[in-house]
Length: 323
Image (cartoon, rainbow, N blue to C red; front, side, top):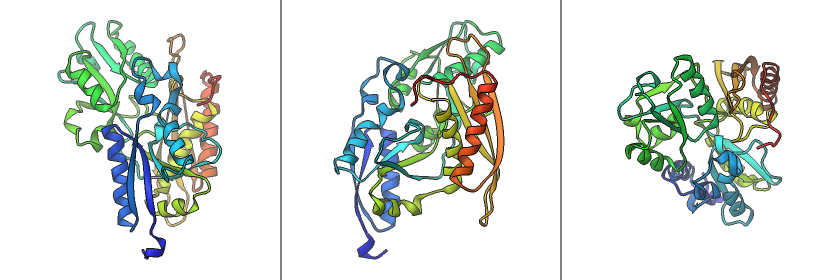
């Protein structure tokens, strides 16, 4: 890179250890391209409100709003997000400029003593921050006749959740495998849920980078960091969430996998699975599946729209308030 193309960039990031790892990862990649990069650490509303479930206080946007204000005011040039925390529709003037190669998208079972749900003692407590995980865990517990197990809310950053587990507040907790792996905490993982056991959230394991729409220079600088198969894959997943009005108040899963990856300018074959559960367990979990040849955002989005329609036909109910 020539000096004329090198940029001085500031990354807005949450201040949790995982968020800072993600921002540092992006900084290192941009520095390797010849840019100079600073970090602007920030505390979001989602980090501050720890005594209530996200579904009760505003959902996904609580983790990105302050970062967007920093972009709008020119204090930062880009914001690095865990994509599953990013609302399906960004505010006017903001773009998702880059999605990077995905880490492990699956959920992890973390427990100091118990290998899985079947091993839990009577009246055990399992912690999770996600309505999606809560519904899918409840379904699995019902299948093995474990009505005694309680699923309790678990808020806080990754380190806080692990501390609460270690203090004995829970017998086990369920976390995204990606965060544990990024922070070299794989030894805390007792088991991994395969997607057939617990379908991941839309965008789980992927990093998204947000910029102001007018910042074509920043978008250009981010191009070497893009992974288009990942971006098309999560586009399909996020289309399901968008069509369902998906937010933290909706127990919704959407996960896609390449049956045949795109190569040499040819479309790949992408399969997409989705699941929706009733938070009150008044109805069984609804599921839908679809697949399509994908080599563009439009084709990925169309696959997501199709699967969302099938999910509604299977009994899922659209949320009244979008994310």
